[in-house]
Image 1 (cartoon, rainbow, N blue to C red):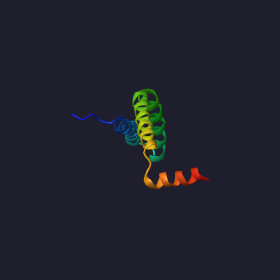
Image 2 (cartoon, one colour; image 1 turned 90 degrees about the vertical axis):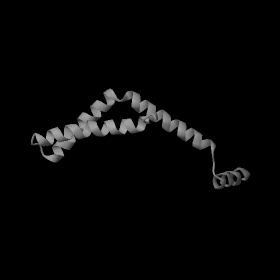
Image 3 (spheres, rainbow, N blue to C red; image 1 turned 45 degrees about the vertical axis):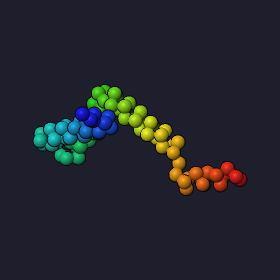
Image 4 (tube, rainbow, N blue to C red; image 1 turned 30 degrees about the horizontal axis):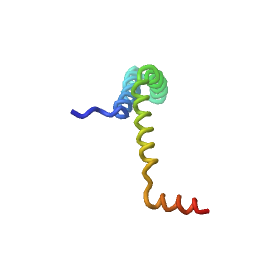
Amino acid sequence: MKRIPAWLTYTVLRLVFFVVPFIVFWLLGFQAWIAAILAAVIALALSLMLLTRFRNQTSSSIYRARAQRAGKKSADEQHEDDLLDQN
């Protein structure tokens, strides 16, 4: 069974943390822009408190992907680097 990537879990939870309060405020009769602001503040607070593990896993996976990419240069990039090294 495949494991769900941390970035996907993080993104979905961030969306849920915004959408649920937005809908609640909207149903309570708040104007949409006020509901959006309140929902954004709540989503930010919840994500900072509850999603530390997913945020760290996501940033680690991005770092690893970038580090692997840095070691592999295309032929064009390698040619440009060689030209610069000659000067």
